Length: 160
Image (cartoon, rainbow, N blue to C red; front, side):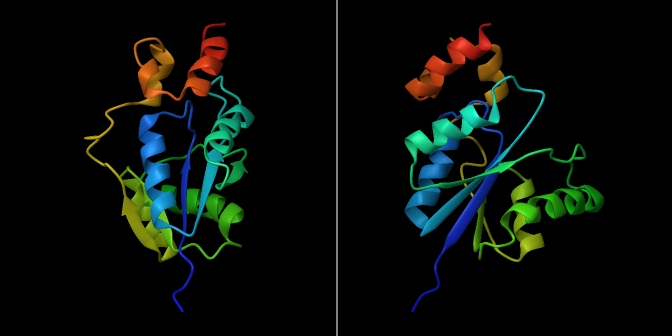
């Protein structure tokens, strides 16, 4: 009997866009279960609960974990990776994770640290050349990269 494949990813999803959706949908096709860890952030005015609601509405089969008070130290150096991983493991250590999904360089560090498979998706941004930062700055310009429920909420939240 083949072992269950359980993948996960991390992110802010602020807002959830076509690139995120491509990664999520790829994982759903490949995994038996998929978990998303959503990071809280005070730098973005979209509440974590709203970001989770978008994902849960579009992908009800996904398990969402809220990650509050993340470390401020980021980077690919050993110290930063250790700090980030110790924080992340508090949230996912009870799950028998087999794969880490990302489109970022840090994916290799996470997978290596956990001894799991590093599954990168569209790292060159060929399918979706989009950034949540750009979307937050120019919502109307990038609205076609957003699911309608995300766009409608972002109009209310970001245009205050």
